[in-house]
Amino acid sequence: MMLELGLLFPVGGPVEPAQMVGRVGDVQDVVELLVEHVPVMLSGARRIGKTTVCNAACQRLHDEHDFIVLEIETPERSTAAGFCELIAARYARASLTDAARQGARVARPIIESLIERLLGVRPDLSSVTDAEQAGLSRRSALELPIALARESGRKVVLFLDELQRAVNYADGVGLVSDLVDIYAGHGDVVVLVDGSDMRTLGELTAEPYNLAKLTKRLALSERIPREDWRGALRGRYAQAGLNISDRRLERVLDFGAEHPYRTMCGALEVALKARALALHTVDDFAIDSGLEAARARIDDS
Image (cartoon, rainbow, N blue to C red; front, top):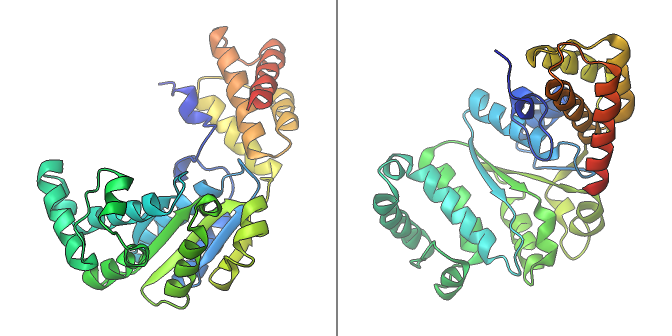
């Protein structure tokens, strides 16, 4: 059975660990540090797979080391209130999985009651404004992963995706400073951060944020070796019911230049063109027109 091309050649966002090309060593580096409770900041250029690597590392921590994973995608907001609310919601979900299965009407009162007990407030989790009016303490929210670790008796990895967005918060300095203060050297919760080089290195690591005091920085390469791409793409074209010659595959790899987004985008557009033409073997026309479409897509984005 032929698989959908968007699943075989994913572009535009994080991919499942099983779909990841290369990066095995990068995932291993992250896992080894986090198991030793060394907080990690994975940085690099846009669209090279930082979140994918972090997700794969978190899955291994869960499956192999019994960590609880709390993933927070830093929201685009004006203050840290939405960020704190997400932590509260993720904490509640992890703590009350069985209650949550009964439905939101059952789970929400229990969740709110539990957070009220821990924070001394009873927040309405439906909006940022309500959370602000309820007086949800930033620091108390940031300490919820510690409460989860103590209640469960398990280690927790707090994965903060795109934390560089916090530099736009009016209280962003306070948020990052609290994170550094709370989690530096903490034995039950270890922090994993990812973000783009420009803001992570240019702003978060330096004064007044000082994230470098908390995390060890790992730089993710913009390139994945050609040999990794060669085997992966050949297998995926075969899963799509397409044969591709060595020469034509090299043209796709030349176009991608080992960059994750460019390579996967080129491979996808070539496969789309070949399938639209009802081909069983990718020909030069599918390569030419597919790579032209990929170039236009990259330019548009």
